[in-house]
Structure formats: structure tokens, C-alpha cells
Image 1 (cartoon, rainbow, N blue to C red):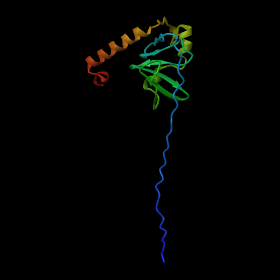
Image 2 (cartoon, one colour):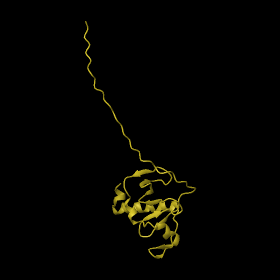
Image 3 (cartoon, rainbow, N blue to C red):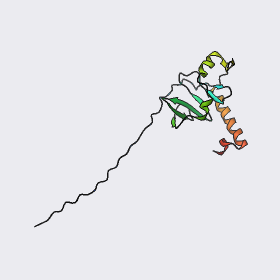
Image 4 (cartoon, helix red, strand yellow):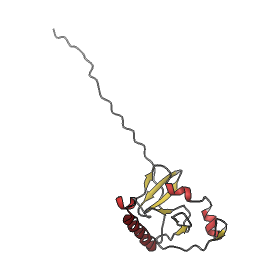
Length: 140
């Protein structure tokens, strides 16, 4: 007579949870965006777009649905940025009105459009100057 013993075998359950943060929809560009430097901020904005697009510290920045994203290319490569970028505290919420009215802090503002190629040259010059001063850009 055979005796069968049933012994439960423990099973391993594996649970994987992934939370994806959606990327913002692409912005359609017919040409590279022209920017304007907001006085006293060091922040460039692209006023010709319906969405906010900023350039600061070598990165393109854009808010979308309460989150921030950045890329080194205005066309693609957007990644989620955890938090609000430090420069944003210097950007007045009414900058578009100031731009349209050619006024900044109650004074006339003769803003000049900065083409993309010139913006890149300005950024490269700033990086070189920061490097010479031994600043953070030069230590990356």
C-alpha cells in the first residue's frame, strides 16, 4: 500500500508596479523658435508659440499639466523634471502681456527677437565664460 503525502509548495508571487509620467505632446515647428530675453532674468522665452517654452542654462523647458519637462533640443527628447526649475521664480506670470504691450515693470521694453542660431552662440559663450571663472558649468 502506498501512502501519498501532500505537502504544499510555497509559490513566489512577483508584483511589478510601474508608474509612467506622460510626456507632453510635441510642439509643431515650421522653423526653429525665435526667443526674447526677459529683462533681468537670464531667461529666454518663445513668444510666438501658444504654449510656454523657455530656454535657460542650456535646456529648453516647458510646463505641461502641472509638471515640468526639459530637453536640450526644442524638437524632441523631452524628459520629466522633478520639481519647478529655479529660474521660473524670476518669470512674471504676465510676461506675455508685457511682451504684447512692449512694457516691462512699467517701463518701455524694446524687445529684440533672438534667432535660434544666435541663442546657441550666446549659450556657448556663456558656458566658456563660466568655465573660465571656474563655475558650475565648467565642472560638468
